[in-house]
Image 1 (tube, rainbow, N blue to C red):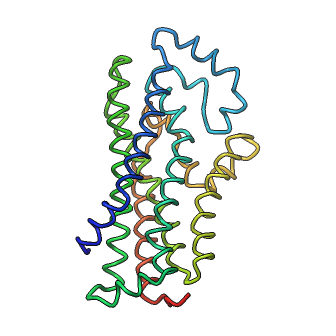
Image 2 (image 1 turned 180 degrees about the vertical axis):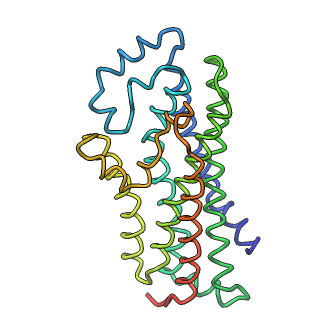
Image 3 (image 1 turned 30 degrees about the vertical axis):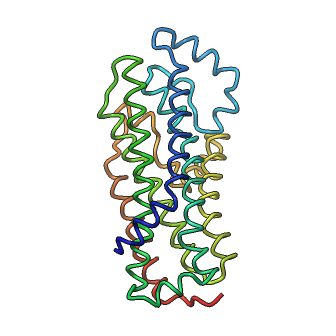
Length: 265
């Protein structure tokens, strides 16, 4: 890893990361503030008016039985994925695609910086940025849910952690596709399409439920039910290994492909 390049990345993208974190934690805080532990039924009645729309995002009205389950289904059940996909795609382009397009990568590699070290540095920054987002999500969730009343902090930590691994796996797939093509148009299209297709399959699977259950499972987003995780009715442990394995495979493949990539536009 190249520390100079890593510091440059954090300096260059710090403004975007800060604004994004402020936006997502504000949105999460507003969502949690809407729930009243003493009037769960009233909250369900309010959301009942938008049931069809909410189910599209994997939001389950029945799951709104307590503040933690409510947060799991309203935020972690689908809306989080939209935020994170936008986040990763906005960063992937300047980190992996633009440097090839404007030939700045060729300039960097003319110094004592190997392709492998360059890519590991860029991916490490991307993972670090994603980790910052999820640490912020966990922190604001703890604060807001503590205000609302007692909750299982370990269940919340488990949910946030598995969501980090899930989104990391999707991000590594997009990263692999971004570095696999010399032509920037192909790289942009395929890296963004993969994540969007996964999200589309997840949303369609939620919309029609039993009729499209198979479609839901075609997306990594559909393998985890956030409410089941916080209710301890689902063994999430294997999915840490599954998502971790997917991340490691595409991370390794990205390095292999990038080392042989033709940098000419």
